[in-house]
Image (tube, rainbow, N blue to C red):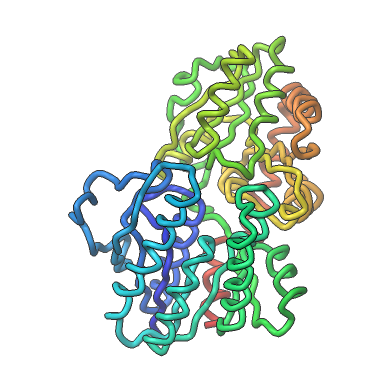
Length: 403
């Protein structure tokens, strides 16, 4: 059996979809499925082609045993709609022409978002006579519309029409959360659906096998300080402005440090807000490679997981949860719905606060910082829960059986 994964995002880029797809590919390959990847020249999140790949230096490579082919893509760090659309549609075009040369493909699995890649996937599945699997990690365009990222009515109408077409053409639609699966099922009841959750490699993120990295020293934190850590995309969905507002309320608590590690479109705005508020207890850091994360998580006390207070996110489970829980790090969770049910109500692996409520967030920080014994217990609960319910090996094996 041969599976071709079509995705705009893939390692060496760092990020949730990149890690999730690569980890799935490696495990399916190990189970006997012939897996290849068709992706873009790596450029995310800085929106510039990475060193070593420029001018087409690397078009094909093998990463951890996975054959990866790369197509050209238009890259711009502009936030305007035309450059962003050119970014998406350039890869739609180049991925189709690059993908035509594949042979004997049984399944073509496409990652959405970006939803527009569905155009290439539908054309390629027809050309290659392969069954299309449409993998939904975010309900685009619904989430983009509700967050106000896309307001053009014509573009939204086109996107909703494309979404429907992709679901109807797909042999199988996979959703990253049960919320996504239930949403699609309610609107398209005839769709063949499978829950394909994100997860974690509990052997890689294992606190018993990880050395400290010097992270606390690097940020100037004392042993007695409590570090609240956010690591991931600094984007529109997270509502990170509320973290800075909470930090303002915590200025009289010098033993609490807040770290925001990552890159994204909202970072310049947040850096300006930090200066405006005169914050000294919040630290911004650049993103790091995946292999550095266990050592960093080893030295933090609480994983901060915020999202905006929107109905669309009640079915979301941010990927940063899994790594933190596997490393026995408790959560301060500002996500309603599915994530809260799993990790607060069932796992008892952290505290919940109302999304975008900076006062509730600050209260949670104070409570967790004053009870280190409870933090240890929550961390142990979290690792046990993800090991049982979100183990990447189990997830991949379940999907292999579906195929």
